Amino acid sequence: MNKIAVISDVHSNLEAFSAVLMTIKKLGIETIYSLGDTIGYGPNPVECVKLAVDNCSVRLMGNHEYSVRNPGEMAFNEYAEAAVNWTREQLEHADMLDEATDLGAALKRENTLFVHGSIKDPVSDYVKETDSDGYSNFDDIANTLEKDFTAFELCFVGHNHQPFLATGEGFLHPHDDVDEFYVKDQKLYVSVGSVGQPRDMDTRACFVTYDGEVVKYHRVPYPLDITAEKIINSPLPDILGKRLYIGR
Image (cartoon, rainbow, N blue to C red; front, side, top):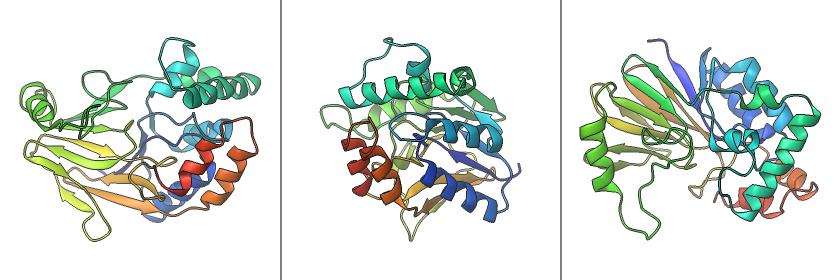
């Protein structure tokens, strides 16, 4: 297959999205799959949706698109809920609500599935290393890989904002010295990280490239001061800007 870029969780961060798109262009990659949550949290939902429409061959629904489209159906913390409501207002004012949120939940290409959440719930479920009590999710994920990955081998996911591979033998974490993983003929989740709100203590935007055999993680610096200042000077909760400085 031709090499593709897979992105997720832009979260209305125009500066991060622009930097990632520039990097993808420099890599000579023409096909971009977005796994959802282009909107939410950040200050530029309209601009980011326009960029996604213009640049992404595939756009899937994330939980923020779902919540903007279906008010009150998902539970959020107070900060995320405030961002969802504000984002809905911006998209309605720009007459872009349908364009931003009328999206499919999953896409299967050959032996690969693309979703925002997980195979259990493509929009809102999480693939996480630990559960809410801090215990490892390895056994559950290994069981899912063995029993449920039948019509496909790889599943690319976003939603958790953290880059890692979940395999039947454990979790693999990319870093600056090791960022390429051979995945052909293996069953695993590929968690692609977040473009606009990373949560792995690294403030740089994150995305992956995939050529049918190798997954490569990319980290891209961007002027997060600009994004954070926009958030703090908007009706959005200040914490959504401040958290960008710590990548959490």
